[in-house]
Amino acid sequence: MKSLTGNRRHTVIGTVLIALMLFPVYWMLNVSLTPQRNMRKSPPDLFPLHPTFEGYRAVLNDQLPYLGTSLLIGLGTVALTLVLAAPAGYSLAKLRPPGAGPLSLALLVAQMIPGIVMAMGFYGFFLDLGLLNSWWGLIIADSTIAVPFGVMIFAAFMSGIPGELISAARIDGAGTWRIFRSVVLPVSRNAIVTVSLFGFLWAWSDFVFANTLDGGGDMRPITLGIYHYIGNNNQEWNAIMATAVVASIPATVLLVLAQRYVAAGVTAGAVKD
Image 1 (cartoon, rainbow, N blue to C red):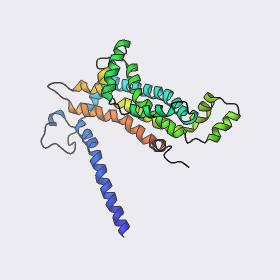
Image 2: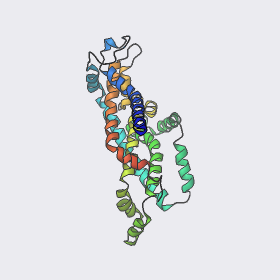
Image 3: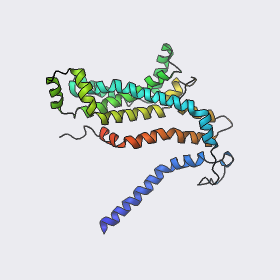
Image 4: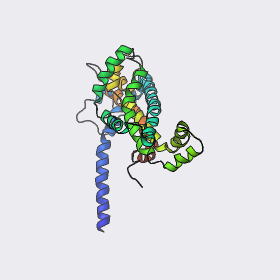
């Protein structure tokens, strides 16, 4: 009986905490359906009693180019991150190059640098190279956040690959690159999905790099596209929230589809046999 009561109490507490965490998401959806004339209503409606889809029509009319740019930047960041992080992680995990320890520490420290500091450094660098206001410049900038994380995930995961598997490939005549491409990568699916997901989400939700490096370009991401509805004397809150709802759908779908791979990828290397 005590066990049953305790389980019910935990269930109630968990439900309340989840409701509190999801309330901002619900309120975002509620505001996106609220007519503009009711935005300043006091007290506000807890439910969209007279819903309008004007905000979503505005998204379809105005925000699709921004969504496309964010998708392009996200996929480009994923591709560049995988190309750089996977070989580096394999090298740290299995090849043990000189300076592997300091390099691992440097990757950890790199993740602690505030984004605005990196953005200002990139601004001067990109200004000299002519990369400001370009989508490939944002891919490079976003990758600097994703690559250190990706290297650490790949290194942790690949360190758990049995050495016998790699030794057998060497006996069969495979070189280092062939082993990496044909043996290590196929069994590193969880790590690949984890790194790809986090890299995409970082690029998709980035605002600091986008606002600093691509504030006036023609191909701006969705985080800057929302500013289309914000002015000095007018804020189209239903359109803003509708844009936020639409922009959150890809991230939500990816998280749902990849959650089991992510759970395995982020815990790789935590337990040794």
